[in-house]
Length: 464
Image (cartoon, rainbow, N blue to C red; front, top):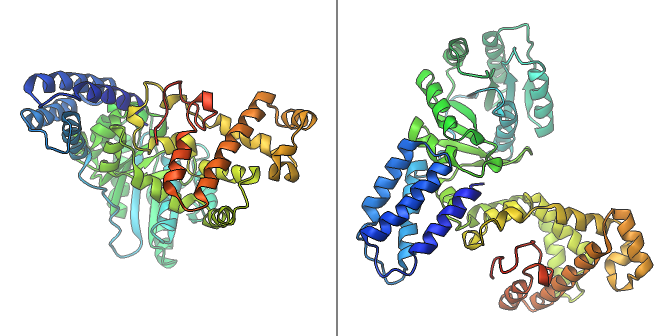
């Protein structure tokens, strides 16, 4: 997410570092680069102009504090203005009303609206501990109702059965009545999407809005459409009193234009951001964290929250006790760690939130994928439990059997064993609780020459 923009901005910030003061000349040169980077990221032109004007006003002539380099001072100004344009803080859903609190979902066809309804239902059920019912008022798209029913079953929320022979108004009224009868706290109404904005669509959703009087009206838009996402959201907002926007498919958007444009163009906050296909791939939108990510400074808070939710604490505690007792770190433990990383969205998702990613060589982050980790898992799965616990017994014939069973090469297996040895050494340093030793151990796991975990280009990789 935001890879291209992060890469360009990081280069600009490196250029301005080392200057004694922030002068009008070096600031204007940096701002030209920032302007070009934003336009290439498909940020709307009025947003770019406003952003550049505000950064320029704050940065020119600013004295550099004793603790900051000029580059850091400039980044601080840019970060503050990015946050300002995207919204000062996370805009939470307002569900303070007599139950059921109704959320009306609007959007164009193909934006991922129905999937987002299920993700939001899951989020409210798991994170906010609300009872949720979903209903589809989309009577036009074939199998739209069945799709939502399947998704509702997957995430474990109530589904109100509707029929394409009914009108959307009838469906909405019946669903609201049923939600009241069941004392459901939140009712999410999915509406029909269209390939383009038309008056018929607007009339229908206006009628639904008038009928339901929802406390939240969210517009779902595809982040990959760039500044068009902001313009479409504005058109809906002109016709309908939107309360917020949900950006979908942000994980596939390397530019970030929509995230930076929507708030400014519509005046409505981005409340959630979709970062994958799974049911849990919906995050509250935090402008400060996104700004930090765009600037290559990571998003440690989100990383910690994700670890809290998705890492199996019992397995982590069991491994910690095992290491403390000096019982080593075998390949079965290694496999568990790979699984934990996958649960957190894979190595690319974790890297996206790690500080210092902006300092990587251009294109380094995009070279990291989860295929090698899946390959490692396949290799370990092809081993017997005895081989996993004691990999030293692996001879030539055992290695051939394992690689044939996992569809890999001998060099893949040897690379895995080398990386496992490095992890073992690191875990031994952790035995005494010495964090400094552990971090030095991590530092040795870089680059393809050392068989490092992520395949960074030579000379690249994060420094611990």
